[in-house]
Image 1 (cartoon, rainbow, N blue to C red):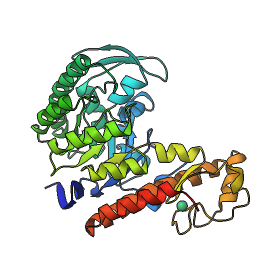
Image 2 (image 1 turned 180 degrees about the vertical axis):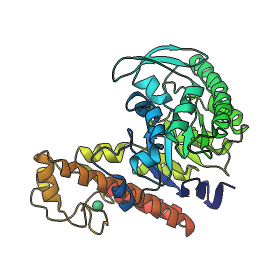
Image 3 (image 1 turned 90 degrees about the vertical axis):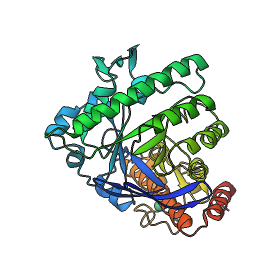
Image 4 (image 1 turned 120 degrees about the horizontal axis):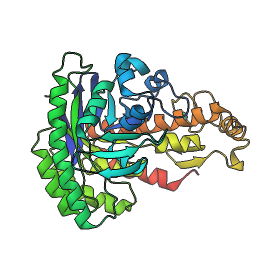
Length: 378
Ligand SMILES: [Zn+2]
C-alpha cells in the first residue's frame, strides 16, 4: 500500500506516502522549483536544511528550455539537480494554457508557441507523460485543461469531459513508459486532476469519474485562479468527499498559510504555491504574527531576527536591519535569506500541523495559529 492514512480529525488527514524516492509525511507543502531551481538562489543543500520533503518542477518550462531529452541523457532530474528525495512534476497543462501563445486545442492535444523562442510545439496527454518520464520525477501529473474559474458552464462541461478522456490516455501511456527498459523511474506515479471551475455538480461528477481509474493520488486543480477564498473552500467542501480518502489529496497552487489550514481541515494533504518564494524575493516575510515588509523604515534599526526562535538559516544569524539593508542595496543575499525563511516557515507549519493531528489537537492548533497571524506583531 502506497498511502497510509495514519489518523483523521474531522475531515483532516494525517498520512504517509511511500514512493520510489522515499517517504512523504503529510500534510506536506511542496517547494516550487519551476526550472529545477527554487528562485532566490536556493540550492538543494538548502532545501535539506529547511525541511523540504518534496520539490516541484515544471514540465513545460523544462521542455522548452534545456529539454527533457537532454535531462534524460544526463540521468534524469534527480541526478541533474542533485536531489534524491521526491520530485513532483506538473503536466505542463497549466502553463500551456496560461503562458504560451495557444494556437489550437484539439482532441489530440494543444498546439502552442514557446514563450522562449516562439517555436511551435504540440503537447497532448502522451507527450506530457513522455516528457515527465524523461525527467524521471517521482509523481507525474495528468495533462488537463484548466478552464478559467469564471468560464461559462457549457465551456467547462466540454473541457472537463475532454480532461477525463485525456486522463485515460495519460494512464495508458504511463503504463507503457514504465514498462520500457530504459525508463529512468519505472515506478513513476500518476495523479489525476479534478476540474470544473466553480460548478460543484460538474466537479463532483468529474471526481467520481476519475476516482474509478484507481490512480495513486488525486488533485483538485483550477482553483486560486481568480475565484474568492470562500468559493474555493466551498468547492473543497463539496468535492473532496468524492475523492478517495485513502489516497493523497492535492490542492494545486494554494496558497496562504490560512488557505492551507482551511484546506487541511477539509481533507487536503498535498500543497504547492509560489507565494513563499515570490514574496520572499520582494522582502515580504511570514511570521507567526503576520507578514512583514522588510523594506519598511521601521526595521532600519531592528536588530532582532525576522522571527524570534525561528531555526532557519536567516534567523539563526542575521537581523531584520541587515536583511533590510541587503534588500535596499539589491544584494542577492537579501532575497535569498527571505526566501529561505519563508520556505522554512511553510515547511515548519506543515510539521506543526502533522504534530497537531498526531496529538488530536488540530482544531486548537488551527484556531490559535490563525488568531496569532491575524493579530500581527505587538
Ligand atoms: Zn527564520
